Each structure stands twice: as structure tokens, then as C-alpha cells.
Length: 111
Length: 110
Image 1: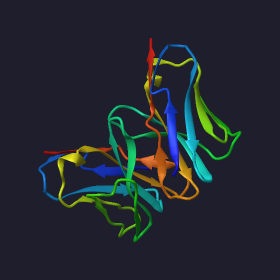
Image 2: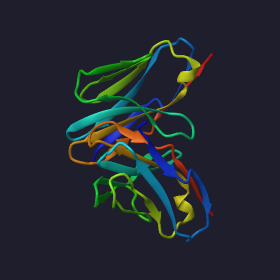
Image 3: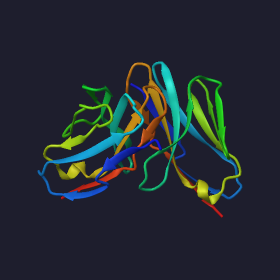
Image 4: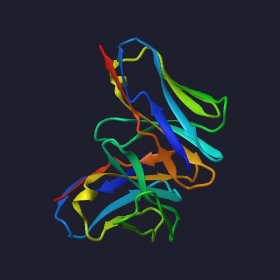
């Protein structure tokens, strides 16, 4: 079954404590991306990757890092989380330009 | 800059009452327009991709159409299980970013 898997699904953390949200896809897709979704603001792109070792900023990259060492994985790193990064995060993947598949989301609360 | 505007923000229908959702867009070189359905707390679920003006796609009670400036999602005889937020997104030729609208929240009452 085609899947985009994110972990953790739910996380409460404290300000400044580094965390990583993992994302893995089993469809051999070149393109992967991270979004955050906030009430009234919709889905906004954080970072995307066209292929292994190729990443670029989206609309709201501040405070986030990503890496793409393997085709199937695209972790999102929050080096020093702050309360304004409390949000619902989605990872997505696509065979470039085609249908984009989303994970189930990761609820992150930073206190 | 690519932009997507969806209307209305919210729509309430009675079961069986057909209607349409609108997605207006501006993009340099459309590579694809996507419709997604999203249930609360869940990831967006893919519905349709449209690539060129005049294209239409159907799935059960849903039909998506595309012109050079907008797309419509027509819902025929909706049922309560069609209640969800419907998202429209565009992928422009000058960017590798998918730009989303803010969605239309559809509620279908029995």
C-alpha cells in the first residue's frame, strides 16, 4: 500500500528542546515536502526536496531544518522549538509534478 | 507569485442539494491543479488532478472542471458523509511549490 508515514503523530515538548519529526514514503518518489497547517492560514510549505541531497526553502522555513540523505526519508528538524511552532505538520511526496500524497499529520505543541 | 482563492469559506447544504465550490487561481504556467478532501485532524486525501483548460474529471458525486482562471468542484446530491473541508492547490511552472487555498468547509445536513 502506498504510504507516507510520519512520526511522532502527537508530541508535546518544551521551548528549546531539539526535536525531529520523521517522514518516510514507500513509493520511490523523488519529490518530498513539509507543510504546516494553522487555523485561518491554511497549508503552508516549509521545505521541499526534489531528490536526494537537493532541498529548498518553501514559504515559512524559519526555525526549521531538513535533510534528504535517502530517497525514502525526509526528516524535519526543529533545533530550538518555540511556541509559535505549535501546529499540525504534514509530510507529502510525489513523483514530480504528479499526484501529491500526504501523511496523516503530526500534532506538535511547544510549551 | 502563484495565488489560490477558494469560495465560499463555508457552505451548508441539505442532503441531496447540489452545489459548486470555486477555486480561482493565478499562476505562471499551470502544471497541475489539485483538489483534496480533508477531514478534521487528518491528512488531505487526493481527489483530482486537472492539467489543462476544458478538462473534467468525475468521481462518484464529485465532478471537477477547469478553465484558464478557475476550477469548480461540483457536488451532485451530496450526502452527510461528504462533509469535509475541500482544498484546492496549484503547481505553477515557475516553481516547485504547491500553493494551497484556504479551503471550503462543507457541511451536509441529513
